[in-house]
Image 1 (cartoon, rainbow, N blue to C red):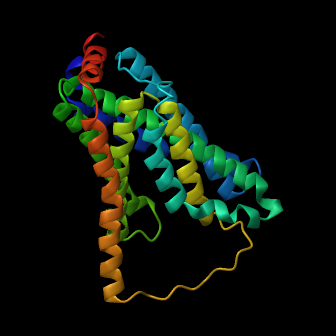
Image 2 (cartoon, one colour):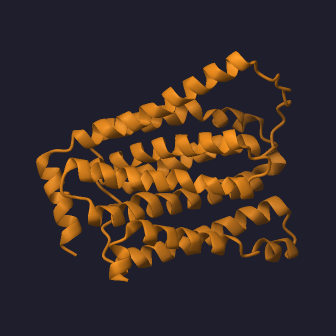
Image 3 (cartoon, rainbow, N blue to C red):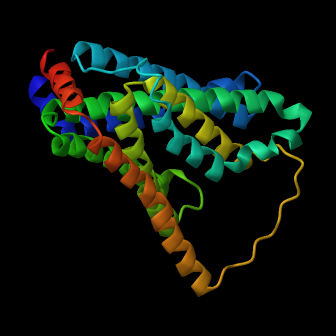
Length: 276
């Protein structure tokens, strides 16, 4: 296991493949058979699998002595500000909560729980375990730490390739946009994590972001659907340029955050990764 751990790309790939296989287990059929509808059954299935995977990640981290900081520096509030800005500017789903049908509260609660377990899983996996794996190899300077954060965020973004086969109606443009955006956002999350040593706050922000984005796709509101008009070529070009710039900002924020790490912070980080 030690030789694999020293090859973080291989180790990370094996973990992700294992999670993908586990997600293929048809647990939802058991819940449907018990009388739940398909949507609620899928939420419960995902929550159960997320919990099992989280336990597995925790065991691996403990067994391999990979340092994960859960409750860290709450005083560094300003480092969370960019994450909160992206949450409130780009996740407008909270506006539809007032329009939710009262008969769909159970679906909303199950979706919230499934989203929360997903956020815990993703933060422990990518910022905790996988970034921790790369920090074992890259931890002695700002440039090495930057490599560790970049590689872990690249893996975080690259798993969205799976949407080609798992997401209904997925297009090449849509998936590549997801990969670019999540890589940049993941880089900012990783940098803020190393600066604040607080995975708990990142998990909460991640949960709120995914919940706000996903709630609009639940189709449990009374809001009338608006038929969109296909944009022109010029509008498409402008939109893509805006997307590249707006999601490039988190990457730059991550770069600045890592650059602001002091010599003592790097020294302590190096010590935490070598004294295992």
